[in-house]
Image (cartoon, rainbow, N blue to C red):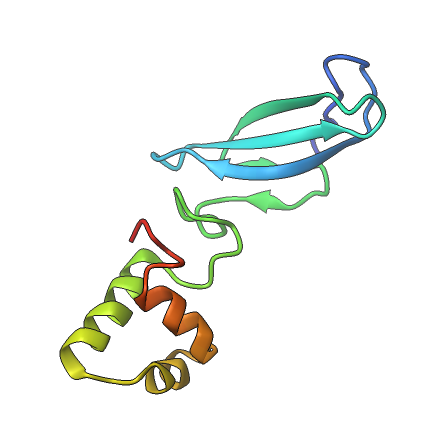
Length: 119
């Protein structure tokens, strides 16, 4: 069953667009940052994790790891493993890229803390 559409608190119209999605540290709440397409008012909604979004997609623990970006390719444990493997086994960026099926550039950014800085 789909939930009610979210309306703008300022103009009370239903044409809102999600600009950012964040999960709290406990993994129990989803915060959706929205923008009204009519009046451009920005606001936030907070819902439990087991809540269907406007398009009917269910957001849950299997889809979003707490504190992680929804489009992240790696988990925190995988990032730690990549960095430790690079340090201890003296593998090249290219070897790790082949192992994890990503580009050389992605591995370089992970090793040099340009991406996944919090891991």
